[in-house]
Image (cartoon, rainbow, N blue to C red; front, top):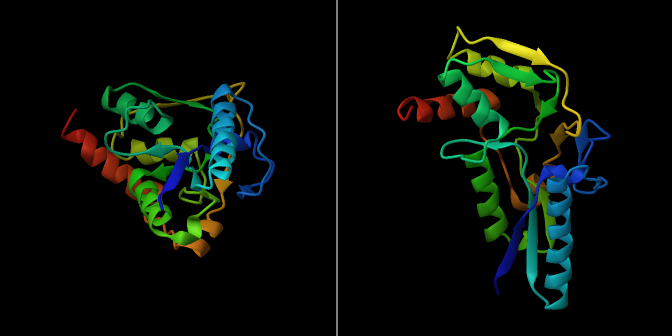
Length: 195
């Protein structure tokens, strides 16, 4: 009576056509990573349906927090700040739904423990996109001397935004607790004792 859980990505949506995307929004990835994640979703559904297995698909976004080693944007900005380097923003107004790791873990726990998550797809994020400039300024509070350098949005990187978490709230009682300010504070406190 187990359940197969596949970790996908918000990158399966490609360019966000609306300010908020739901699990029903079109999936049109524009990167190899997003395409591979979407292929994994299709394989998961096909495999599980063929063998009458239960599954859940989770779509996180921009996960950050202690012990992250994936070189995502928050880790890169934080490490550059500790090194005294500039924080370089490729598209300062670009919005991303940053998700603190503890909220993602809570989402997994809810998916694992709820029968209402069976054969469902969930956006498990903060549910509120913030700009790269917001992120840089939040980190800059802990490093007042750090300079922020603004550049153009990178080509080939999809324009993103907020992922709706209403489905996860309704079906599995998902309730994220960490906004960007609280998450960055925890992340900074983790780093400062290890740097």
